[in-house]
Amino acid sequence: MGNSFAHESVMLHEVVDWIAAHQPELIVDCTVGGAGHATALLNALPDSQLLALDRDSEAVRVARERLSRFGERAQVYHARFSQLETVLGVNVGRVGALVADLGVSSHQIDTASRGFSFRFSGDLDMRMDRTSGQSAREVVASVDAATLATAIKELGEERHARRVARAIKAERPTTTEELAAIVRRNVPAARDGLDPATRTFQAIRMLVNDEVGELERLLLAIPKVLADGGIAVFISFHSLEDRSVKRALRDAAQGCICPPVIGGCVCNNRPSLEILTRRVVRPGSDEIARNPRAASARLRAARRLERTR
Image (cartoon, rainbow, N blue to C red):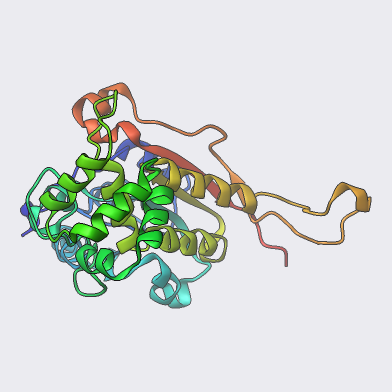
């Protein structure tokens, strides 16, 4: 089982460098996947404990196997971002470092039966957690055309969203092949060679897994779960994720929000985070050459400021 979950962790050295510099006692890996980041962090920080979670039960099983050699230093939970505070329990406010490698793992994409990719024939599933929720087939069948079009436009940034949504509702696809064929008939070929189905598959996947909502809940929890001086590191893979992370970190780093016309501060708003990456960090050319899927990765980091006593 352990060797069947193939996934190369993106920006591994950068994540370890950022976190190791802070020597955290407790590390949280919010997307443990194949345990690449988790293993590297535990190796680099022998005095640290790691708490990991993933919404994919298969990833949880694999991570537990791969991290078993660290004994009690590593604990892995089957949980979503929105369940982080529950998983932490008494450790809320004690997290020295947190990493979230967002998006879909290579294993999920490359496993045909998961239904994430138009490159493989499989059932239209797309659930990151196959133990709960509706599959992509059920979701596209249950929502109306307007709702589906909005999702495809906003989550996939697809200009032809209404046309695609109407066609999907009319033809009711049940497999990845059928969905891809529908999109390709309704979206012109891109000059950059991007498959016309890419944006729609992304949008439906994000809709099925409530990825925007889960990310927003995680971002809101960061100032609460981090210890004073604790660091949070996020790796995003598309513009929607990166904009959400950038906006949340910026808002948490902001002080007074009173309009200038007031002439003073009455909001008493204090920043909770300090942004450590003034400019987004990107993978090096060597990593991209070795792992082309890393090309779209964007890393941002922030540090928890001391709480007022």
